[in-house]
Structures are given as structure tokens and as C-alpha cells.
Length: 99
Image (cartoon, rainbow, N blue to C red):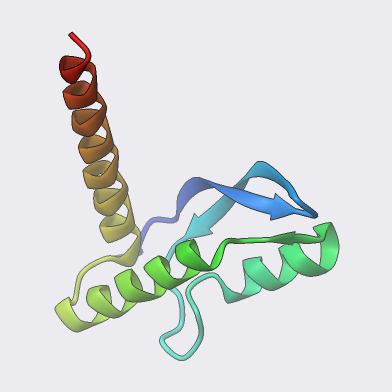
């Protein structure tokens, strides 16, 4: 079964300016960082940097996906959904505090 490739948009640094940039997550090799080639290309061709926090999170998710035999791209999508829902709930609670 072929694993799907998913597109994610992350905020990257371009010489002090933050801009959205699309990264693609699929089935990376186990011996390199999951977005090594995209990160290198962005730095070389566009002068941009993917934040270390994002790269570290992706590396942890990649390790978890390998240890548990699950799809890396599916795990990334799930993690983003959980974070988004938590952020939304935190925002709702803050709004309730202001009433």
C-alpha cells in the first residue's frame, strides 16, 4: 500500500520576515531528518529557515511512527488536529473568563 503525501503549511523565517511555506510529508528514509531535503532547498534557494521547533517535532513524530508501525503523514495530520483543537479550547476558555 502506497503511503499518501500530505501538504502542511508552516510559518518559516525569511531574513526576519515570517511567511507561510508548504512542506510535504510522506515516507521519509529512516536515516535522515523527515524534511531534510525541503529544509536544505528552502535555505539554499529561497534564503528561508524552517523553525527548529517544527523540525524537532517532526523528528519526534517520525520516530514514534517508526516505533509503532504507523503512517508518518497520518500521525502528523493527527497531531496537528489535536494541537488545533487544544488551541481552540484554550481560546474558548479565555473568552469565557472575560465575560
